[in-house]
Image 1 (tube, rainbow, N blue to C red):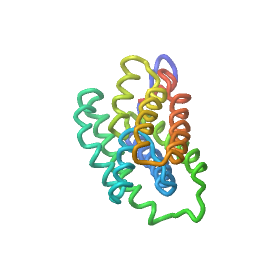
Image 2 (image 1 turned 60 degrees about the vertical axis):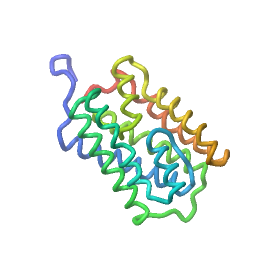
Image 3 (image 1 turned 30 degrees about the horizontal axis):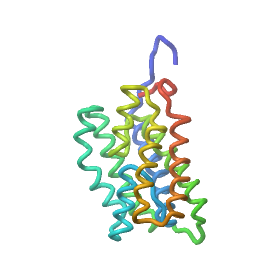
Image 4 (image 1 turned 45 degrees about the vertical axis):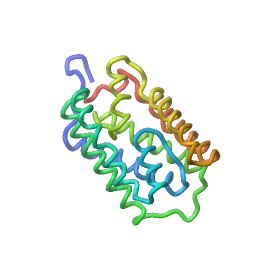
Amino acid sequence: MSAATGPLRHTWYDDALAFVTGTLFIAIGVTMFTHAGLLTGGTAGLAFLAHYASGIGFGPLFFAINLPFYALARRAMGRSFTLKTFAAVTLLSALTSAIPRWAGFAVLDPWFAAVAGGLLMGAGFLVLFRHHASLGGLNIAVLVLQKRYGWRAGWVQMGIDGAILVASLAVVEPKRIAMSIVGALALNLTLALNHRPGRYVAF
């Protein structure tokens, strides 16, 4: 990039490939977490809790929980961001429902699931953020805070996720919470180290 040309603009096929890649990474991480009985933060954490309590699939619950947040996204981040976020949420909901039919785990250590699943989800979120999209819910608030005040998305998201995981102690055994906190650290450190203002200038 040069000063004369300015930031590069993503094409529609750049965005399409990013949505498939990012949501696939996240869906695999979610599948690992589900198989290991782990939790995460944000609206995904709420969907996990509802899934464990009701037996309803993560995908439909995640899609439904995100519906009220699209109005906030439209006001705070604009129409393009909202449409991209809706597309990403819909695709993730579909993938998390489909992947268990496509692949399974004969052996999956919960600690490995926490680290590897967290890193995969962090990488997936990074891809989506860099293409001006998110997975709705609290991701929207986190991105607004970074955009307006320069607060790093990873650190803010880590604080929110930690609070949700601590609150989950009421319904989940402490060992699973400890594993889930490791997963949240892996996810959010990926964002904190890589998603910084000014580091990535395409849009």
